[in-house]
Length: 117
Image 1: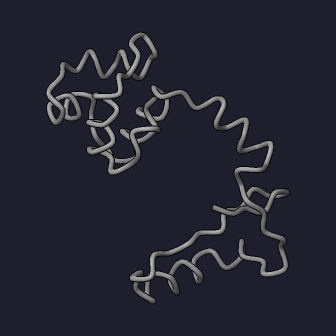
Image 2: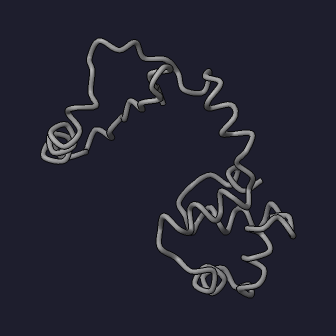
């Protein structure tokens, strides 16, 4: 991912199969934020990104993904076969997320297990 360091904009990359109408709609909707003259940098090299990564715990990542996908703790627990209270414990950091559990959560959110470890 790339970003403009001074304003923290993100250079979004689309998959090759992304419909042109989707790309054009986004360009129209956000044209005021797009500046072709900005210098793009790898976001992972910025101080802002490093601080964000440092502050993002596995529990915070779980909670963020859960909220973005509009899933409840109960629904996630049901999907992976654990009690709702355990999801709460993961999110608050009271319980560590094991590698096995990270794989199950990654499957739910279609992401890497590394997000939860």
